[in-house]
Amino acid sequence: MHGRVKIKSTAQQEEEKRKEKEKKLKAFVSARDAVLKKRSAGEHDEEALQLTRQLLSSNPDFATLWNYRREVLLHLETLREKDEVQKLYESELHFIEACLKVNPKSYGCWHHRTWVNTRLPQPDWTRELGLCDRCLSLDERNFHCWDYRRVVVKASGVSVEQELQFTDRLIGSNFSNYSSWHYRSTLLPQLHPQPAPDSAPNTSPSPTTSPQFHSHRVCEEQLLKEYELSHNAFFTDPNDQSAWFYYRWLLGRAEREEMISCVYVSREGERVSVAFSKPVHAQSEGLMLVLDGQPQQVEWRSTHPRLRHSPVWLCDLPPGSISDMSNEHNLTIHWTEKHTHRDCALYTGCAESWCRDSATNLELFRSELSVEKSSVLQAELQSCNQLLELEPQNKWCLLTIILLMRALDPLGHEKETLAHFQTLKEVDPMRSTYYSDLCSKFLIENTILKMEYAEVRVFSLSNKNLTTLCHLDQLLFVTHINLSSNQLLRLPPHFAMLQCLEVLEADDNAIENLEGLYHLPKLEEVSLRNNQICKLSDLESLASCTKLTRLDLRGNPVHRTAHIESELSQLLPRVTALSL
Image (cartoon, rainbow, N blue to C red; front, side, top):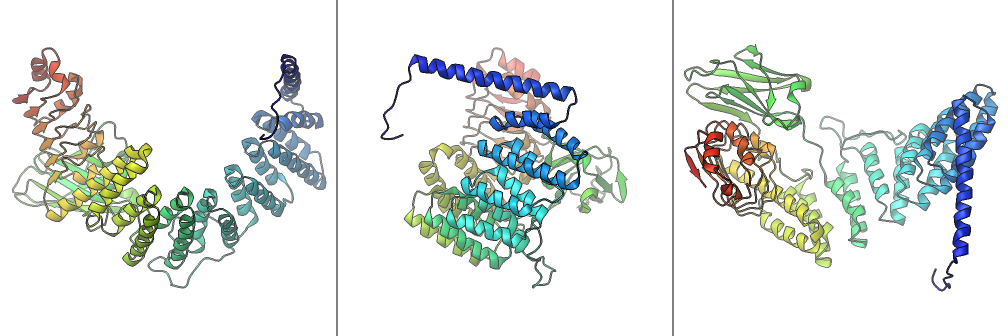
């Protein structure tokens, strides 16, 4: 401590401390062995309680002793009257409370306390709630206590409204109380849920209902109040992350509905590709394919062996079933587990056909924010911009502004978004890789939107500093892709979803892994100049692309491999134009 003279311990004092520790350890080990011996002998008596009390008082994290103590208590319970059982377990609660003073975050203590209350003939939940209040006043982030509080609230029937008022008090005394913000996010949807489209406008849950889990969003009236509460918090302390995380949750939207988003049929390959709104395991999802009214026996597979759960699944149709260009065919995919289906018609003279949801219509890439009234989001953007004027280097404010801009107009705000990402990398260099990946994600989303608006099947994102690839399931129809002059290190397994790809340009990156170039049935030309492909084995996946005839590997370390041309001719016999 400051102002106190530091007294150096002598060798003699150190020796005395060592002997004292050894003495305590010896006593602890002796008592432990005695307890374990009694347990092995099946002895469940008062002495066992006393011995375990002695040990747990100094080390409350000895799980085996808590287990033994429960065995003893259960035995004693059978020997006593109801009033005596009540006293027995009340005494146990006092003992646990003493142990919590030794370690307030002891898993064993909190678990044992929960168990004791299930055995009490008349549990005092008001006392338990008071204990939670005291513990959280000492350490507001004690997640053990928060978990226990939820147990107490559920058992005692404390209303959601009361618990929401509890979070009001904690947040009011300390905006940095992340646990309170999180707890609040679980309570609001129960007390102020967003009404369903067909529900009566005045219906609301009873405030006396005990908290249960709901995934609904919050009604707009309450949402505006919560926005104001968040503003108060981050205008008070802009660098505290707790309120910013809560604010992100308020702006968030529910997960996308599980559905079949696309069906693609290739007459030449006699193959069907099915895309889902989120990754699934089709082999266990109950998919059924019906062709011209007849169910077909098909085997579903993902686009790459490493993708056990994938948003895109393929199957081959029986030979000759759709190959005749003069015939029209109607195909339906039934997803029996989700009670939904998708139709697709292959018309006469067409080599391919598809039926899909448009990313532009679904507002698929409006970040993870909800599609609120634009006026509300615009007002939130204005508030954050005001804060940014006061705190121009605040990373939380910058990131939130980016998300709000994407929720309002991702293409219209693209230039500003890129500028904010650059600022983020400068003010928060430790997370520059995360910001680069997020920026890459947004650029890919914008390019997909532009491609759909233009109704083309060419995807170009050259010289954009991309560090990662995502949303590849949205590129199922792309025939030509240009990813040159970026910072990509690999073409991941998800790249195999590009089932219509014919030409790939990926020059001037740092690509060293091509595992995503796997069984692409239409791929004819690949340019990989100036990358980091070092070994012949790095190119093995290309052998599965049976239409590949042109390959450019100039500027890659692999060209120094001995006998590289003859090795490649054996590996890729169909390639007729090879550049090394």
